[in-house]
Image 1 (cartoon, rainbow, N blue to C red):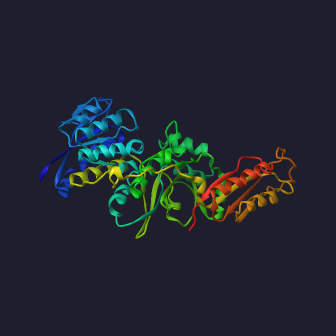
Image 2: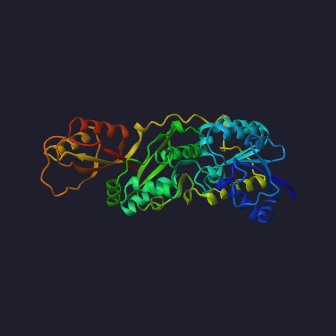
Image 3: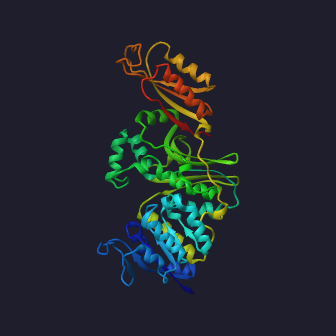
Length: 439
């Protein structure tokens, strides 16, 4: 049997402690299947006194993650600190410089510095493994980097943030407001005290940038992604989607658009019968469309066990002698992604207007849609059984909600039509626009 693979772990939170427990529990089977014993020999964390419910006896302790990363007695440095700057970045750079392969769950670090880190790792002949950085326990990184090399990938899309999926699921199933569901998510530990990173789509964008690098050979760059969050989604939108045969999900989408790659994160209406539409709660899902196979992977997107499982999977691959470039392409061959041109996006649209309930409103809406060559598949108007409204946009009467579903058109045309409708003074509130994915 080969010499033991010696592991140093920086960060002993729920995931780091879970990795220690899992490696200890599965030690004999891992050795039998990889041909090599895996040993945690050193760790680093901020608080030595904290009870982590794992056996750290005989394991060397480092107060500095950077010093641990430089330790000549480790083979693999596992970074579970988090953050794209500061200690995490310095420690990963130090580990690579010392000739250690890195395993990390840090999507932000790789999204912002992936090209530089991959280039440094390739120069030192070491690897960076990051299965745990995207979709928790779902093996989507390995699938894209290895299993689907025979495919030309056309599109990768998915539910990549469990917090957002939980909120949208609770809103739909229980008729609760966004604010109430967010509060519950925070109480359950699914959302941070400051939920901006999750609910505004930035977490999904970081993960999408890594999937796009693997699938299409573009440089990870969250700034190249059009990003919208879920704060604007209302019960009215979820109810309308249900009536029309859709579910609303926050999706990250990376798709070929000629020679370019379209990268976008936003709420999306997807048909109820699609597998991804049926994914509820904190669960994640990733759909991959290749020219040979199309598949959807579903599983836990976060949590200590799911993330630890992904980290241990990477470690076991290394124990088995797996190699390869971090993104499946040499860093020097990764091309710039370019800023997403959402104005050129083509597809169907859901448009909800708070229309002033007076004669001529419907005609004005239809006229401006026609001027932009937008064909309407359906129109829904739920009247409230009240007298006809006033004749001004600031009338005391409540506006009438009008929902338009378009046939395939482009973003620029939709925005031009809405701007013209607004100038006519026939809508009383900012419109809601949600892109639709169809069969």
